[in-house]
Length: 126
Image 1 (tube, rainbow, N blue to C red):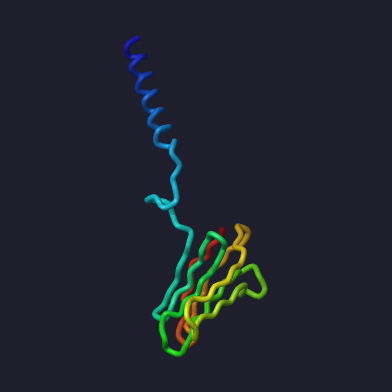
Image 2: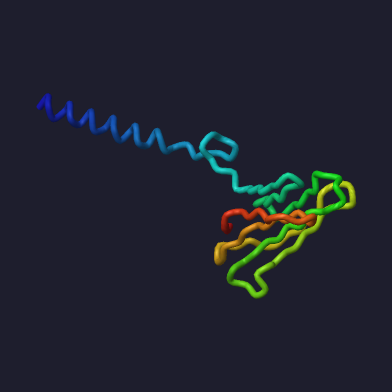
């Protein structure tokens, strides 16, 4: 009888520990919770996807006479480029929005208008 009660107590403790570990949901900003915003950059500027509102921001960070072009691409769409944002020649960053869905993947492409290779994000969706 003692052994059965001891086993029951151990099993009950294990169940309580499982529920205690899962009772509190993770909150945004806590350690281990991924931020869904994404940024790519090069030596001349950056492009950021802001998940809340599906906004894209392109910023030219160098006063070198050349701007930055950020493009949102969708491989299932024709044309591939769904949104083009350019920045340069004025103060501040430029932005634009496009609805990012779960039904397709998207990626960001950032190019310095002075030449060189483009920078790409990984494919992502909502």
